[in-house]
Amino acid sequence: MEQPEELNRLKDRFVGDWDLDITIRMPDGNALAGRGTAIVREVSAGYGIESVLAYTLGDMPYEETDLWSYDRWSETMHMFGVGSDGSVHDHTGRWKDADTLEMHWSGPGEAEETITATWESADTVRIRSESTSGGKPGPAMDSVGRKRKG
Image (tube, rainbow, N blue to C red; front, side):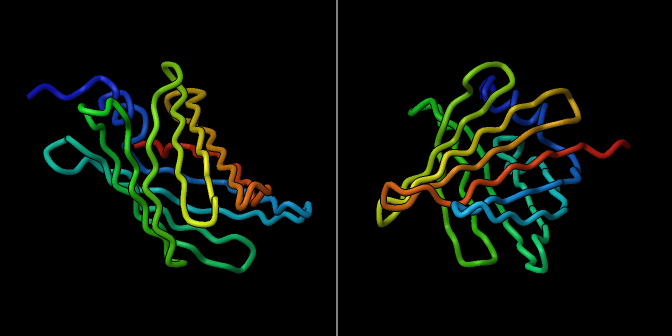
C-alpha cells in the first residue's frame, strides 16, 4: 500500500536528530528557558514515526515519547504522546500548507492545546504550543529545532 503524501511530508522534514532551544512562558509572564534533543525515527515499516524528546527547563528535566502517523479514513495526522510528568495527549490535525502542521488536543476540565510546527528550512523547525484550561490561558512554549548534520 502506498504511503500517504501527508505522512511522507512529515517523515521528509522530521526524521533525524535535532537540537532544541525551548522557552516556556507562564500566563503571569514568568519564563523558563532550556535546551534539549529530539531523536526522530521511522517505525512500523515507514507507516509511522517515533519522536523521543529530552530537555531541561530551568532545573526540571522532562522526557516525552510521541508516536505519529496519518489516518487515511479521517484524513488527519495523529500524535500520541506520553510525558515523564504523567501527561498523555492524543493530538489530531492537518497540514495548513506545505510547511506548517497544526495539531489539537482537548482534555478534561476544558483543557486544550494547539501545537503549530513550521519548517523554515530543511534543518530548522519552529514549534509553538499554546494551552488553555477552563477557557483561561495556560503556558505557551516556543521551540526552535535544528537538525544535526551527518
